[in-house]
Length: 92
Image (tube, rainbow, N blue to C red; front, side, top):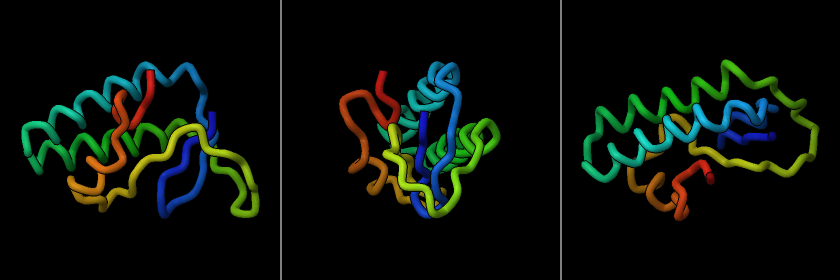
C-alpha cells in the first residue's frame, strides 16, 4: 500500500503492517482523547517511524494515489483531530 506522510513524501509499505499501524493509531487516538500532549507526540512519532522504517520511498516524480495519509511529525493535536475519520488515521 502507498502511504503519504505529509511534508515528507510517499512510501510503499507492505499491507501486512496494517495491524501494527492500527495498534499505534489506537494509542494515538487515546492520547488525543485524554488531551495528553507528551503521549500524543510519542504515539505520532512511533506511528511515523514505523512507516518510515518499513516503507520504501517512491521517487519524488511518481504520481501514485495514497491509500493512507498521515500528518507530519510537527502536526498539532488539533490538526490530527481534523484528519481523523471514524476509524482514526488508519482505517480497518
